[in-house]
Image 1 (cartoon, rainbow, N blue to C red):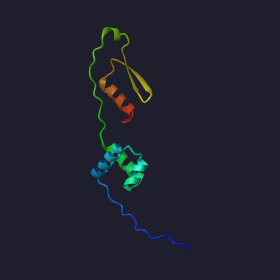
Image 2 (spheres, rainbow, N blue to C red):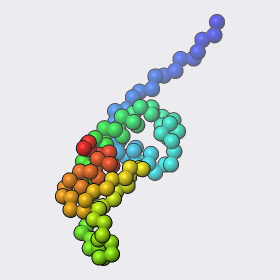
Image 3 (cartoon, rainbow, N blue to C red):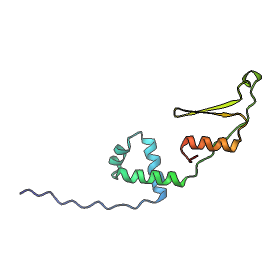
Image 4 (cartoon, helix red, strand yellow):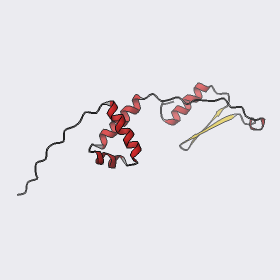
Length: 114
């Protein structure tokens, strides 16, 4: 009857928010897949995912900045703005309120629901 050798259980390290941010920055710079990065550093992929999601929710989404643009008369014949993001094309009137347009852009980016 063969017995597996006893191994010392791994002690789980408590992560602080600052440590998690450092790990996530290192992951982003590594170019590795999440699984490969976690295996290399000795923690579970679930922990990486948990902290990525938690910090994403805690970080306020930056609202897009809008800059006034004056179009030449030849381009004013079709007073619409087109925004394409991830294969979704949205056309809005040029006179749409900038705050409303900002909410549309944020929703497209996935930061807030419409």
